[in-house]
Amino acid sequence: MARIAVIGSFVMDNVARMQKFPAAGETVSGESIARFPGGKGANQCVAAARLGGDAIMCGMLGRDSDGEAFREILRAEGISDEYVFSCDLPTAVAQVQVDGSGQNRICVIPSANYAFGQREIERIDGVLKGAELAVFQFELRPEVTRELIVRAKSYGTKVLLNPAPAAKPERELFGRVDYLTPNERELSALTGLPTETEEEVTAAAKALLACGVGAVVATLGARGALVADKHGCEMIAGYAVKAVDTVAAGDSFNGALAVALSEGRTLREAVRFANATGALTVQRAGAIPSLPRREEVEAFIAARS
Ligand code: RIB
Image 1 (cartoon, helix red, strand yellow):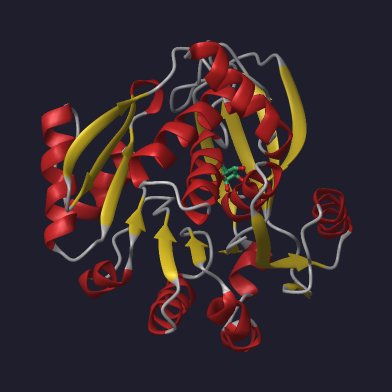
Image 2 (cartoon, rainbow, N blue to C red):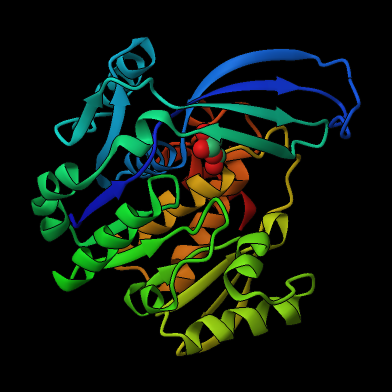
């Protein structure tokens, strides 16, 4: 099976549930607070592993109890931690708010994730060379992610970039990205274009293709995802489900996309599989605890066909 290397973040999420997000200066009563393991990199890697992908994680943890908890999770999921390094900064944490409709707001304190630097880039060079697909997000230092993408591409490894949280990298990076997976907000940040309507999303995706991106998969929540590549633009419908917690929905989508592509499925087939994975994820609380296994996704697709 083709190897998927996920290079990215670990974050311990502190999740407060409330009916309505507080406005600036407002205090609201919440319903619960809980800690869940997350981080876009870790979420995507665990998602891929649970779906049967040959996934390996590269990242940075603190030498603390959260770091140990993440190593234990990787062991339980059968993911090697050989390229998960430790530093003296604390493992990253996030403050997450989830409202009554399952929508989220997140603030991440990067801590150990930002200690992943040049030394670690050199140490994972062989991983980048050996992988079929390398998966990145924007939760490591921007210059680190940039160099890793440049290296991966120079080795002929396919690059999947989930440009989250929203940022605007230098234009020349786009030509090195095979699959770019922004949500509407990130798509707008990348292009400077509006992304309110499907027509606007299509125009923004086409603008990225013109910059050299191989394929754009714009994730549009419950509506599904818009695929734009050399074959044209197509909306792949999502699944209507009741969302409890949307945290890690995009990550499970990306993990699923990586697995389906690594199995040789077409991009459109891979997006259908990823839509189903995301639909299952939003029905459960937490980041890593909400990620479904392969059998569940296949049963869900069969039940909805
Ligand atoms: O994408 C969701 C993730 O973003 C959360 O788990 C949080 O840790 C942030 O990194």
